[in-house]
Structure formats: structure tokens, C-alpha cells
Length: 98
Image 1 (cartoon, rainbow, N blue to C red):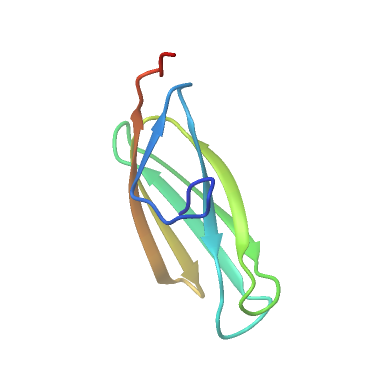
Image 2: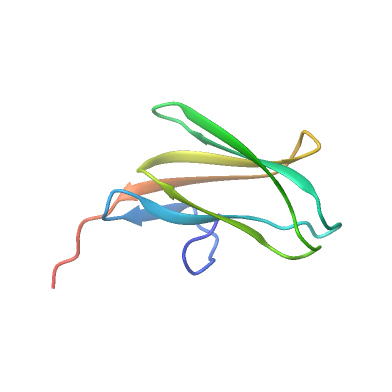
């Protein structure tokens, strides 16, 4: 999971109620890999999964999503086996003042 600058992060802040983040899948071995991404939220408990097919080998497949404040865990699966996990937290940021 990356922020807007594609930097891997474990904590995102938001001042507008939601944070935008990219979920990134890259297959370094093969192309056109079918994979499943599952995102779960700890409280309140919520889970959603979606399927996709990767493009060329070593090319990032990016899924931009918006997240409300809370703790999340993402798992990427290929052939039913988990190949990667990422945990992160979205926190409400204070509005900046000028």
C-alpha cells in the first residue's frame, strides 16, 4: 500500500474524512497472473475482496481506494495462497491553519 507519492506507508492522515491510498500488486515471475485482494477493517469489522489479472511481468497494478479512519489489513492471494500482507492505520488529521 502506498501513499500519493507511491511510498510504502503504515499510517495515513486525512483532514477530509477519508484517505486516498494505492494498493499495488506486482508479479516479478510471470505475466497475466490472476490474483485476489482482500481488505479488512478491524472495527467496525468489515471485509471486502476483489479479483484482478496482472498485466506484464514486473509492471505494477494499482488500485486506488479511499479509506475512512481505522485500522486495516490487506492480503494479496494467488491461487488461494497469501503472497503478501500489509497493515496500516488511517488517522484523522487536524486541519492546517494559515
